[in-house]
Length: 334
Length: 301
Image (cartoon, rainbow over all chains, first blue to last red; front, side, top):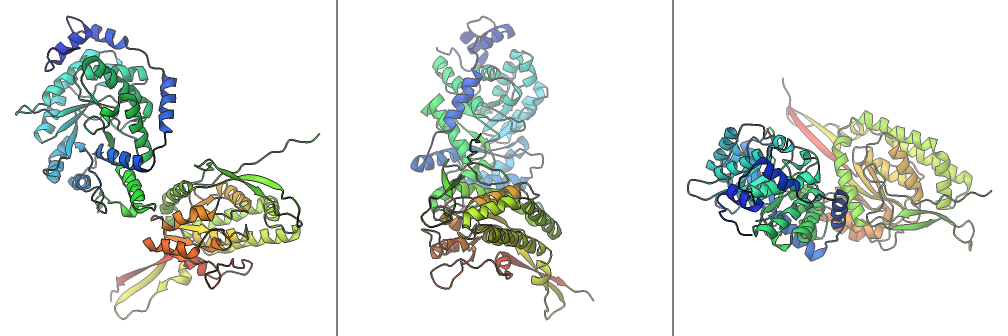
């Protein structure tokens, strides 16, 4: 289906839904018209994908791909400029003992740390992602959320991770969620016309059902999200494989429907190489090979990088490695 | 009416839990025949640990190290003494296990179990005495207090003796953990059941999970990965004696890669010999896994 004017998401959504006016009722009708998710089947499929055996050269390739897909993240109240600089340096040189180690895709920080991260990363292709819109709760008025976003953009953020208003979503007020995403997307455009990529966090741990995850995915994509992201990392459960499976199906179906590609970012709780590789298997099997690229798939993680590097070292040196051989990016607390 | 046999398949002991081997393999354990030519009696199935189980055990041991090494020596001594209490209350099973494993007479097996429990108590008693005996105030030429104190080295891989299935096992594990190290132990391949019972004693005592991890299986398969593992700080090669396919010199060479502390097996030449565990031990099994921290402090007037 063609998109009449991709710059105007409301017009496009109207066109896609086949309505003359975008109302809450129209959105509800469309989202609740989506097929329900077979939860048991979805969990079984996720478990089956998790048992695939990826060894030797395939494993090496998967590890490098996974490293290149990481949004290296620190989102703590106690983040200091030193910690952010340490994280950014880590992104530049993930493993000092092996310069062939790929860099993560981005460094993900709070908006006020964007400038610090940008300064350390310099001209490197590693992007700076900022969480915005009253992350992680999203409980603030729209002007505050927009100011938060614009602030991060002005500081040099290349990507914005916004949270949806889960309260509005659960109350069935889809139009509010839609409008917020549209407004934040507009705020992502810089003065020179270049736009930061917008990742929309659905916080699937608060959406309760997989049906809701599917609806929220479609709602975010309708509103113009460049990425749909599982979680803030502050709520458990975060990025589970079944939830990611549903989102991958959504982006696959969205492309069939509109021809546009949307990225997926599971975040939170992915700590081991084994986990990461089963996510990659799911990406390949559900969405397709086109998504096996850090332009379209990301991991939001902090400790995952360490485990991937340990595995990488293990494959290079032929012996198990340990924490003593991993760079410690946490500055001394003294 | 005859009962149906309760066939046992034992598991590994990693991080305080009893998981199956990641490889899902197991092997059959037989009793030593009571007379020559007799058909060996089936005892149980034991998990056949793989290198990935060893890797998981090292992770568990590393995780347990900060807490265990930071516990007070007094507390460690109490916790280890509690293990001896549990062993004592399971004496009957240990006696049966040792008889089956080593083909001993009932009286001899009783004596071995007593010696093993006494050995554990003996080592437990050392927890708060090590620092007094091995550390102390050093005489220095200057206005300084100069104090040395022993500290645990970290995660210790232990190849348990192949023949002495309980007394030998206790004699290699207790000296490692008493000073605050954590252990990854590869048990005797043919005689693993006393180690399984010991794991059950450890799990039901107050020893934190991960302080002792027991892997039943073949040293030839697992030991090279432990010897080269960069997150292992020391390795005890005692069990290399009579372990098929194990060259302790190669293990020592692999251990040099990250400067592990190595306790060589008994014997003088290239041939490893299992030591006699009945004698009262020297301190050397404890000192082998200690580092010395020395502190200089200026002395006031």
